[in-house]
Length: 228
Length: 298
Image (cartoon, rainbow over all chains, first blue to last red; front, side, top):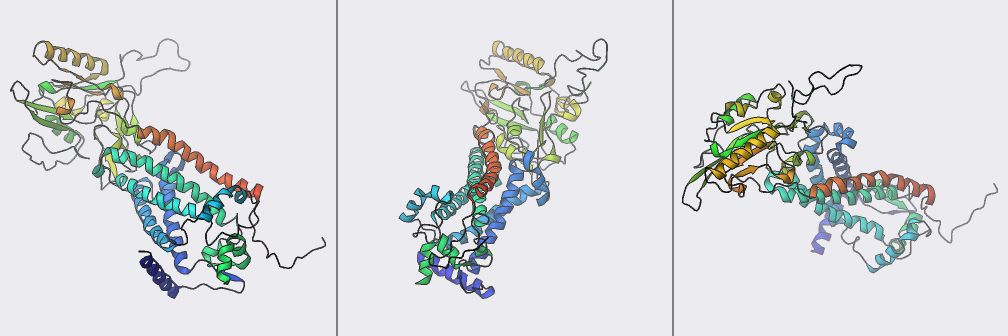
């Protein structure tokens, strides 16, 4: 199974690489290849569309001004499930793409115990066992993966309420809601960490490269691996 | 006299009593349905379709005296038919006029997220305002009677209005006007409730229906459509009328607990990130430990 996934990812990366490229200047490291960037931004576009259209449906008294972006209330309701489905499909590719990098290790438990030092910036650099992703990133990734399943199993009955029956749909609303809260909290942190909180990070998802000293600061174990 | 809407409550600089005050004894209206005298003629179905100017539909025959299996977005009123054999060997044809119950505590209204898509008038009528409906169909699962029906073409939900347009002009609903047996009546909630109790007592004392009673479920604070049933202990028998209709507790969890928490999170997460940046600052890439250290004289 893992080999098949790895083979699929490798082919996908090669195919995406044939249509795009990443320039690596001296003193830089390749962080995210073209394929990862495409999958990330496709997921992101569907996610934001789902989020904004979802808000408009969820609480019109506060977010009704979002509905015109999607052509008014009824069309927002019509499009929202499709945006969600698009996100689920796009992110499934990301799950396959990062299955190995995102695997939880005992080092991640060590990281989680030091989360206070991480958040307060007492640690100027990450501990040297931090690899391609730190435990916070992994936690966010798996939270999305779980939420994605919750969204899907609750969203489909909400999409076709007459087919699935009252109880299923009623429980679906609560599950959908909780999944959205988890996603939302994570999403705000994700954007903050990827931009203002850690200068030099955002370019990894746009141009695909990071500075050598960025890698050394934030992902020391990965940095060492690239040099060996 | 418009019912409940335009009755004057107070007038500025006006001496004496308000004109029209006390003309109406009670605001709340009610539809009375005596299933024991319904003959299943379907005049009310036709009157409903005609008054609301909806197209006639192909009926479907399923070996009963029911026009079609269920109500539809453009068919709001249906006589549900059930053949029932009591233990004494008699045969009963149970005919129940099925339409919106206009609950005092409407599940549809509680579930609806769209501003102004469902309103409840002081006279008890629960009305859908399609121009504000976003077609999410939350009302469909919010309703204990499975009444709201979705139109996949207009992407809106429709149901019986209790002829709010007629009632607002002091007329009775179209179905009431059409009923030939008088099993349908329309009036104030108190009057109809009283009439129903009287009829139920008659059924118990004179006609031998020991369990006869009124269906006005207290679990949703009563309805503005009430039934007289031969056997009020088994309302399910009459085409699936729920014994204890309820709005599921998931709505409270969802709307009154999860939703405020969610909104608070939305509003707090962004300032939280902002103040983290202000107080803790960004995590800059560190220079290599063996790199050159520069010193500037300024």
